[in-house]
Image (cartoon, rainbow, N blue to C red; front, side, top):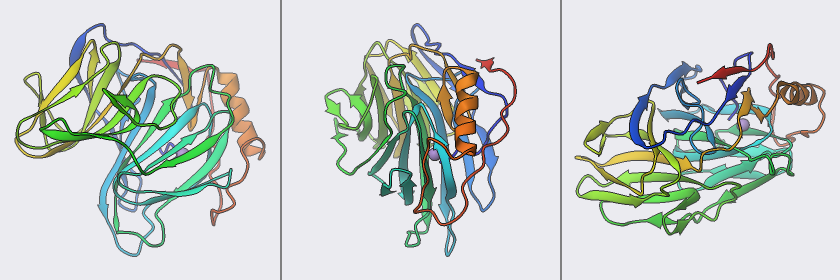
Length: 315
Ligand code: MN
């Protein structure tokens, strides 16, 4: 997806990991994009800009439709990040400027590594289930990797942990002994977690990482606290595991990782380190340099929004 809630002023985002376990609820920001598509942004949000290397989380749907193209995000550029397209229902077809095409569907990951620059589109395919529900996440690339050549990967065989009380499918990084095998450049986890509705689901965590949960459906109990849908539940650092329970089946997303070592600057679909890099990337896109063309997309590409001012530090 493109950042559909762009601001003119870039944001400087610093990692501020909590020193101990905690549960802090941070509200989401919601935007109605028309055609019934509502996007709920939980990251970056007021009070939390990064969780490990995760710097962006948009939830969209659930939506049911007929004879419509609900998702139609025209070609747009990215630098300095990976886009993680993970669906709970429905389909989204990806085309990019490397010539890659792949359909994301539940259990199958589309992972694009932008590196120095790539362009892509994401659309509801002509043949579809009439449903759409999913997340778009971004991972900031570390300094040594952020200028690498771009790439795209599609994964269909992602590991599942089933310790009792539910299951967790790992789509990025690792969770205990389960390794996603997907292309990552810093220590992290991204997992789709189903709490069964009876018993306790115990998941191992890396104690030095920070973690957060987003409740997609239902309610879960953690440390005597009831976690509900809407926004981000930040869990801090220093947890060796999670014990989740639920009275009815519930669905949550787990993200985490080693605290990110450098401050990032975000604007539109770019993750960089300085305002000058953002300005150059914007000009490269507008002048049709660097990013290439998404020739498989039928239609016109997105224009970059205005970029104004110096980066503003947001907490
Ligand atoms: Mn995108």
